[in-house]
Length: 296
Image (cartoon, rainbow, N blue to C red; front, side):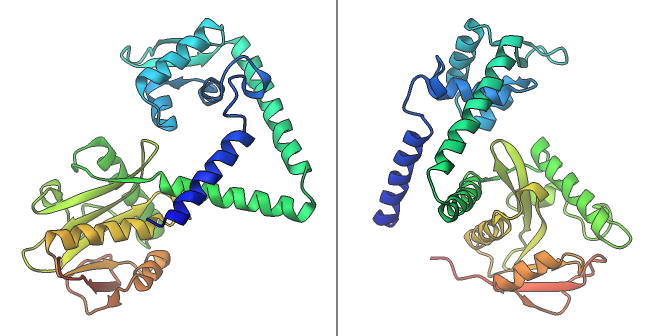
């Protein structure tokens, strides 16, 4: 990795932590550090503790300590969920809501003070740069994992994929029609299902099917609507290609529907060329293939 780029990231981190008050144990002039204030804000109308840990990428011990401190201050209560007593729910007390409103007011004032120090053009540039940094940092938080097709996360992705295509395709869509990719087909060594995760939630998936020395067959590639615009589709495609090459496939091939114009543009820009139909997929209008570099 470029050392100049690493140094710039570190400088940026130092400026931001100082600017937002992360170095002060009394964030926004309150008697608690930034971590407790952020957790207070995230709890909102009530959250289970597990989802709080996942959303903030914090370990369970640290979240427990933060919650105990907020409970001792009378700002938060935690109790078992009525639906599942193994799950703990965190809720704001009346005092907790008052504290959150105060934090919101002071956060708004801090942001306004920062913007007010700059002339109009620089102010616009700063806000635009912050939006771009937010987008890129969110993209950098996405993680990929090969997942068993019977895992609830995998099933959720495939249901969401099918539901979107059912709306977008003329005449609808069903996983039970066309060329199937059953659980046994997408388990190694026959294939794999790759899931993209963002803060513990699935935001995309893709399937590879392997057939000896033939090209790997890519299917079920999908990105959740709220995660689009992060460049995730291209990253997901590149990761699937890497896994196909690692398996020894000479190429990747896929078919797609003419309604999926964004996907078609992505495939073409990623080096896929249109080829004659190689299967009888009833939902397909276009067939593509891309050679992969030999291993090693």
